[in-house]
Image 1 (tube, rainbow, N blue to C red):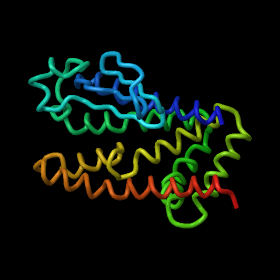
Image 2 (cartoon, rainbow, N blue to C red):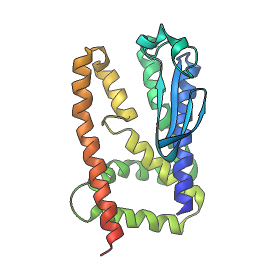
Image 3 (cartoon, one colour):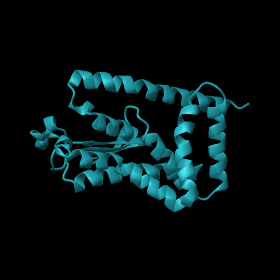
Image 4 (cartoon, rainbow, N blue to C red):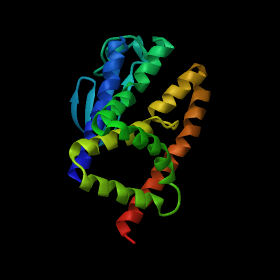
Length: 220
């Protein structure tokens, strides 16, 4: 189990770190990189480390903050993300997932491809009503017990890359989709409606997997 926790933490650090560094490389100002959720344990410049390391986010400066960048606590210098060209914005958005896939292929070889592709189906099907979610959790823990850290990290990277490419609010895939379809150029009210609409499937996934975890913990 420790291997799984360390693998998830490693993947999270790689995903967030590569995304932030890619943005900085293209001259985009970094507002915040948050590792974990819950109470904050550490604050250093734009870095925030929180108690529970199971999620995170990278926030770049936007056009409204650019004129007041010196007032944004911990922000680095640089241009707003909106001022970068579309290919650059997409590169930044997808760089973390690309790094996870490189880790997956480095650890699993050709097996990373099927692990990544099946991740999309498993993430959705495991959240549906029924026993599949609990069965997937049991299979994942069996895999962890039967493999070393490198293989566990590779499998975690493949699944996390798949999750972060889903078109639901809060993922890299959703941001990339909004950029490609031009949603970011819409008014604030329309953007809020779109974010809310795509938030619903994310909530459904979270609720479904929570139920699956409870089902697994309760046993047969």
